[in-house]
Image (cartoon, rainbow, N blue to C red; front, top):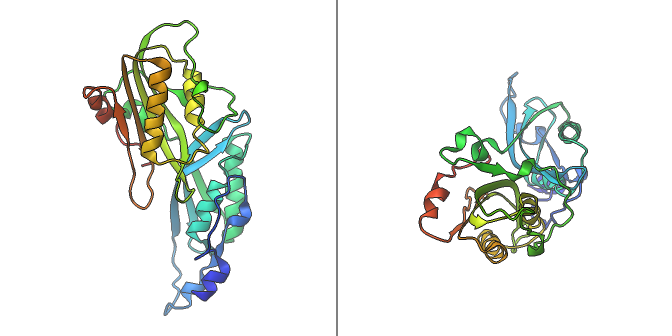
Length: 279
């Protein structure tokens, strides 16, 4: 344990940084634990990790999110200490990358260097189970994340919410996977997807996305963030019906999925929004 403490940040208070910092990675020689084995066979294998909270900013300041699968060869000299891996991935959050390919190349270079052997990495979109055919009977979902817009506000601001230019009153359901807020106790980032259903309102979709992203540096409990969104949407758009729901990713084996609706009938709609593949 003493050797591990020297090599890692175990037992230390470590701040969460959101600017790219590869030096956060803490390699741990596999030989430390393998020395206690009676033998080290000529085995084949790998360590597979899944990252559910990979996010960065594109060239226009808009967040991108992906799931990622990492495969470390069992023959690599070192493994990566898990807390340091999480801190490293978090450091991408407010860092601008030109493309997903640039992110992938950066991950491959850093993790291969830290582990001492090539690392296989794949990145996957988080959208399919929430806004695709697998989502079940939820027709006419509009995926906000496909909008190509510039974003520069990362603290909650209801003034970002605008009405559609044509003023047409509509019924609609909008989904974004770009929700990020932060635990008010630990400061750790919380990741989620949010569904907004409104009837008798005329929201501008781009403004909805900017508003959702504005929670990116906000500190608040999951439940409070959704209640805050609900109140802002209610007061700005005055809809006849309103549903706001979030599906947050896991932390410590638990995930939180707050739902707030203007009528019990809308709870059925919430129940039909299935769990996401990153949960």
